[in-house]
Image (cartoon, rainbow, N blue to C red):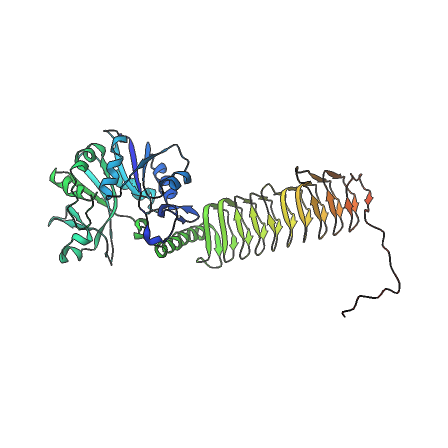
Length: 454
């Protein structure tokens, strides 16, 4: 089979976005629109992806460091036909060419695969959609026998043509050989004064080629983004698809309209996910996991039976089976919690390895630390892991009890069974089963009077 090359048009300014950021870099589901399109092109098995850039070209290039993308500069924006023509020198004569758009981010792989499969030397493949309100779109003009004859842009259409509901999505597939023959002959004699890629439809008919038409499952797949209202509309549609998938896979959502998946989320069975939970990056949730409202979970693995209470933030962490987190806890990258652990309210961890059954209940910071099994860390405990230049580790053995308001000045090791008295500042290692108390001697002053306001 001839190689597939994808041309992505991403040169437009997007003035209606009212933004210094190039339009194709505005995000859907936490990822720039252009990145969605490139990923889909890869899923189709494209041999090469040619991305035509113009406005904000340096920003667009910098956003996507990917060897599979060939950047093509369009110095003047003279229409879609002119844009595709800039990529012609990089297209092999035997290539199948699929044209996509950087501001149409959510066309599915299956839709595009089905369209490309219709392409051969005698057929051009076109993706159309039926709209109740086709305002602004190019109309699909068919013969009496139903064969596609041409695409007429809105500004060039007659009143009769403007009544047509079937419209052009802009997405098409054609052989490179035909593109190289047709694009140099395009004319800009139209209301926009531009070179329309859509004019090659009429050219294909003139050369007795068949235009094979397919349609997406939903119009949202081919919806482009021209302003922030459309961006928000597409975001909510995408998130609704994610919510529906999660519910069919075994999750109960308190409100399907109030969840955001900005990455890859895999789940087990019998989950409970409350409102306003955000998932980012790559997240895996086991079975019987419960997540309270307002949580943010990024690049994390949560094992079976874990409970994440309200407004907790988990990033780059592993949470063991039946662990309890929060409310208002923060697990930073490198945190690894074993089974039946507890990290309570207003606790922050970072690069902390916490053994089975251990608890850090409230108001503590535990960073660069290793905790054994069944360790109890009292409220207000901190590991002093940074001297201004280097980070050092704290090690707590099995069964260690740390009293409240303790400072553990790393590097320090507290061996199994030891107890740290509340309010201590520990700067030296503590032996197994010892009691360590390191605090100033209490002094009571009798007859002392509080200061009074003048």
